[in-house]
Amino acid sequence: MSVANGDDSLYLIATLLDELRNEDVQLRLNSFKKLSIIALALGAERTRSELLPFLTDTIYYEDEVLVALAEQLGTFTMLVGGPEYVHCLLPPLESLATVEETVVRDKAVESLRVISQDHSPSDLEAHFVPLLKRLAGGDWFTSRNSACGLFSVCYPRVSGAVKAELGQYFRNLCSDDTPIVRRAAASKLGEFAQALELNYVKEELIPLFCSIASDKQDSVRLLAVKTCVHIAQLLSQEDMETLLMPALSQIAEDKSWRVRYMVADKFTELQKAVGSEITKTDLVPVFQNLMNDCEAEVRAAASQKVKEFCENLPADCRENVVMTQILPCIKELASDTNHHVKSALASVIMGLSPILGKDNTIEHLLPLFLAQLKDECPEVRLNIISNLNCVNQVIGIQQLSQSLLPAIVELAEDAKWRVRLAIVEYIPLLAGQLGVEFFDEKLNSLCMAWLMDHVYAIREAATSNLKKLVEKFGKEWACATIIPKVLAMSRDPNYLYRMTTLFCVNVLSEVCGQDITTKLMLPTVLSMAGDPVANIRFNVAKSLQKIGPILDNSTLQSKVRPILEKLTQDQDVDVKYFSQEALTVLSST
Image 1 (cartoon, helix red, strand yellow):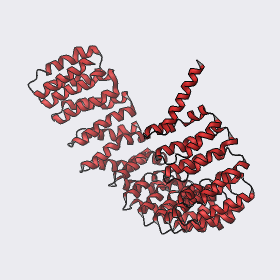
Image 2 (cartoon, one colour):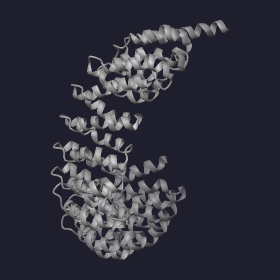
Image 3 (cartoon, helix red, strand yellow):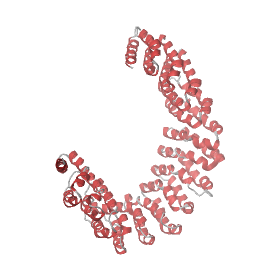
Image 4 (cartoon, rainbow, N blue to C red):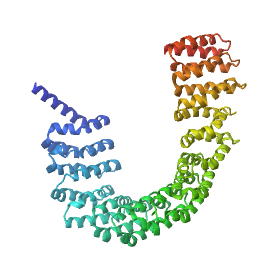
């Protein structure tokens, strides 16, 4: 029996090994994902002597196969015999780290970083550091690119002499002739700084940072922003002021909008890294410049950070700085010509209310809210309505209703139906912000009026809103407030409004359940089966088909089926068709 099992395992290994060489890419890919099974079956010694050399020779396979191989090798430490033999994994990974495809190189570097932790300090210097030097000094940019990601994982665990060598190699990469290598080095500079001694950071790394910040390629310069955050976390306030801030000020005024955009995007991270004192003296003017930038993308990124930047200002000067230096820029942004800028500002401006307090919010922010609530861009209006609760908590519902409600009502009655539609779609969101009492008092009548709008798209949106409102406020609220008004429309002289009653019943039945549907809404639907307009009658059949599954079987048989059977005898062909279809569907449920 054991011999048979042994033969089976050998057959499995042979099959997997054959698949590694198969011409079918998918078979090879699946087999490479099972490398650990093969290695486990072969044992540590044969994995080192047979499998790894074979894998090193397969570097010319398709990219997706090589990605799977690079990923697997990162988990192979124990399969080659443990940390003592982990250096055996370096040759195939070194080859993978030099290929042209970026995703393969990145996965190889990721695995090299993982297995570097399994090397002892002596093995690191004997095997890993030479690999790093070969990559860093390679002829092709691909190897030098990969080397940039490996310095930080081995530097802390090697001797002083080797550290000096690694530092020199990294400096060379930062000044490489190829922009993509300088970019890779710049992206890892902050991470490398975290592994260095403080003196080395100040003496050697800051000059590297300054050279990156003034690189001729903007794709390299923009990476200096993230590096600045990492380095600032290591320095004292005095060192930051003298060593870092001149370069940061230079980046913030860079001629490339992409670099300035990156400064704006990472601004609150920079703010936290440099601390409150430097924020007050140096960063506030920089932030003002970014909000007034000539490029819309930069202004939008800065606008997105307004709330967080203001919240992170020192408490002793926060309100004063916001009122005197930030608010004038915000007022300009609120009327910006670019809708992305206005939308970004609208998403955060409401959050300034708790910072400025009730009086300043009423005097300075409410006019901006009103202007944005009437903006032609729907995203701006949505962002304002979505954050009304921030203002509500500061100035109270009464003040809010007096200031913003007239603007909402004005938009709701706008002559352009698309403007009305935009407000209709925001009502459930607004209702959730303001609560049921405010809604019943101020907005309920508005919602019911939309059900009788002369534009179908408005009536349709208003009908959909009913379901969302019932989900927010509950079935009891629906029974007391909404359903009676909806059912009253069934007697309206205009057949379009009678039809709206049926559409409302369709959506309300989903959230109100069997009891309410049977007792309150079904009798009205059944009574409309005798309507003189054929469109109403066939919509009755469609409604009965829709709400039928919600009703119990006795109601279906005693009340619904007789009406549908009667409609199948109708003179109108559409009424006959839809009533017959409803009977068929309900019979099968």
